[in-house]
Image 1 (cartoon, one colour):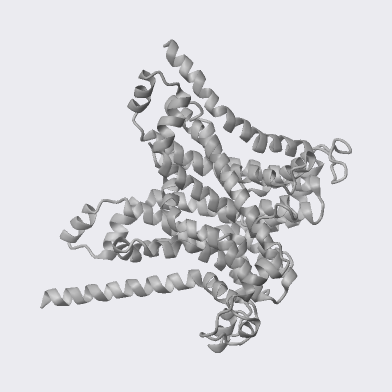
Image 2 (tube, chains in turn yellow, purple):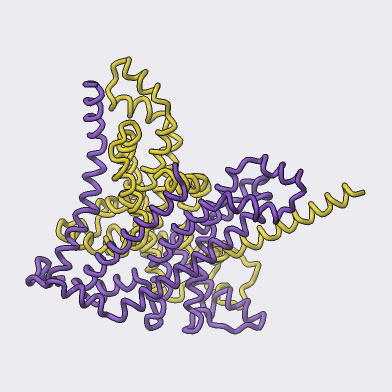
Length: 281
Length: 290
């Protein structure tokens, strides 16, 4: 008797937990949900108030923003892929060897690691102005390369922190075995350690890609048309399209989809990188 | 011995790439900032019309707009951080048992923080729109007639958006800390007959306090420098009621072309942040000796 009462109470609490979860999930994801739904609506349906729950979905908004509407959205998406991808790869190539030197030889542990971690914390606007002037001087404004340099800078902190954490857990025997075979440190780093680091490299790649894709301030300041990322380009729709919410919603949906899909795989590493970074630094 | 010294020298080369890159992207711009801040510069004459001494700094610091923006950023940061961390803590206490059994549910709660804050701002513009937005639409149906983007409410609205987007981040960090606690704690508490609430406050809370400190620190810094969603939602207005410090500097430079003042202010902000970070780190390190 007592047992069934207890289990009944338990299943009530469990039900309440589910209810709370559903309410929170609904509220925080409401703008995403509404935008995705709106992107499949015709203008007529959008202007109906209150909004109908059931409607016939249309793909016309997507074909408009991607092909028929003369909107540049495809170009913005391509820009974002190149900028975010290029920055992530460059950040990995720079941080991986640096992490090795920091962990195995302690070089820069006391100054470089804290310095790099502070980058993440600084108000980015502080660097926006000198970078704008500098880029203007050397002709990097509105270019892929210029934006890649920026996203690399933004990605370096997470890359370095995760790589340092990873290499601290690799036994030194591994290096010793390589050295007995006469391998140089460069060979040990890229041919012995890098292959087993694949999961963490992938995590860094995903996290950097997401952060870089979502960057807005530098895209706004340093690009005008050619290298404009989708986060900036999609906001043009609000002003230039005025009340065309269907097309705007379709552009939004395309702009948020890639990082959201990657985020499903990457989110466990965010917690790890934040906690390990703050403790080990 | 000799071999070790050679290896060390070799390893130093591994750092060259990163150091050169950082010097170019952060060191050089900092120096350029310093030069610009001490000279009379304009968009047309970047080498400067002459030495200005501390004039740019004086101008920057005596502008009442600065103190208003700084005050707004502080208020925004404190309120948003407090709400985010409190809500995240409540969520960890109540949802952890469910998420421990069904880990994939966590991914659904993480979705908002994967979205670019600028696009999140635009999406809120869509659902808060007075005529076609679903939020005012349903609020009207329920008898509430408020203009969420109007002068009276807009400050609350932009803070609410920040909280709704970034509570998941605080939640994720605290959940990671909670999940790293050994299960034996719960078993021991169950044997002692502790209630769930008692267990959460007396056992879990003290153990995840380091994570709470870290996440408070990160969230405050991130919300203090807020730019993206406010910029696309209000542009800092109406008036200057939602102008954060980042938006203030942006406007000085790109809309009012006050180069010297904007650059001087950037340097002051950079210096202040570094001092703050230094003490923040020191505090964190003392709390967490490792």
